[in-house]
Length: 103
Image (cartoon, rainbow, N blue to C red; front, side, top):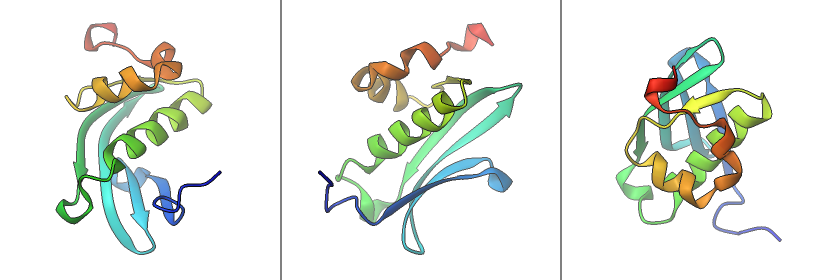
């Protein structure tokens, strides 16, 4: 079953700008900035546009980023303070998470 609230959303890795993006058509709803080194994604900052807040889009964006990384059998560091809470709700990605000390 699909969720009408998120059916029109698109997720992409905007590698040129080092960020994952969530859009609705041509409208940018949010992004996660990252640094990538040797298959380790340091997820540093999450931004959701003010007009898009309060709809769970930050969690949706984070879960899609976690899935993108996991599908490539790579690892991520949830440096952004928002992301560990999201990771708690999506424990299937925990094996791909690393602490900053595990760089």
